[in-house]
Length: 137
Figure (tube, rainbow, N blue to C red):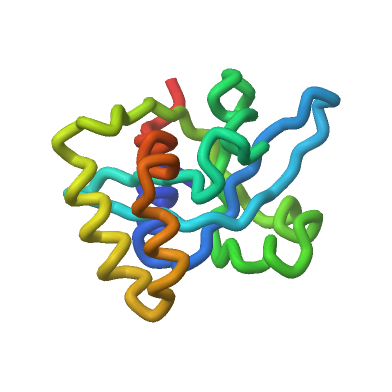
């Protein structure tokens, strides 16, 4: 597996599973949305900074993405952990970053069938919790 597998998965899959680590060391898979803009993947927390997966990532704990359909994590978080995954790193994207409007546009395009959740992903709270996904160092 490679970082390119992560980019492809995040681009082609509607629901992806981010795997984070709890303070106890236990892994947990969470279904989220992802957008790829100009070949670069991004994620946002619809719940803003209160989402525990986002807090795990921002605290510096390991983060990975399941390679495959992350919707499995909607049904069975533990089963998602049995799938192959790739470690990644993240970079915070400020609200005023020039890429934010393009992320918004990709959200609207990719998730056009879900207008209410898209609206929630376009709030200032969600936009302030945008992360760029990069290859693990």
